[in-house]
Amino acid sequence: MQISKFSDYALRILIHLATHEEGLMSTREIAAMQKLPFNHLAKISQWLTHEAYVDSVRGRNGGMRLALLRDAGWPLSAVKTPPAGSGWTINVSNVYGGERG
Image 1 (tube, rainbow, N blue to C red):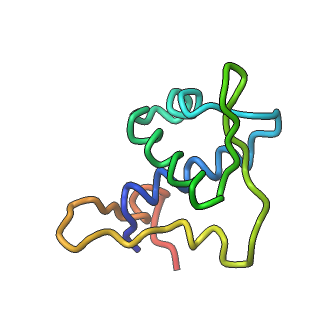
Image 2: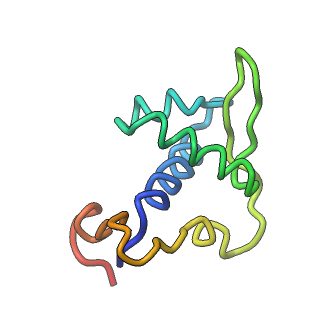
Image 3: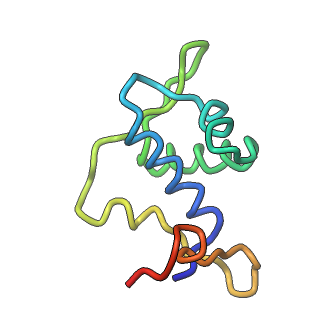
């Protein structure tokens, strides 16, 4: 299965927020922990907030937290189909260790 880098990073953010139990996390903190480019994650975080996957709080002590689940297909609806020929795809089986079926 191939997904876009956008979707991969979005899922990483969601998983990170789901496993983080202590309040809010900033995009910068997630970028540092995941060793991902902050600018990409900032754009994706904004999209996740706009689509109501995460709640965000502005300000000095602000950050993001996972929003409440809307339906059973919620995590998969965050996966976007990459444009054909964009080169923005990854093979999930290579990243996450072997074939998935």
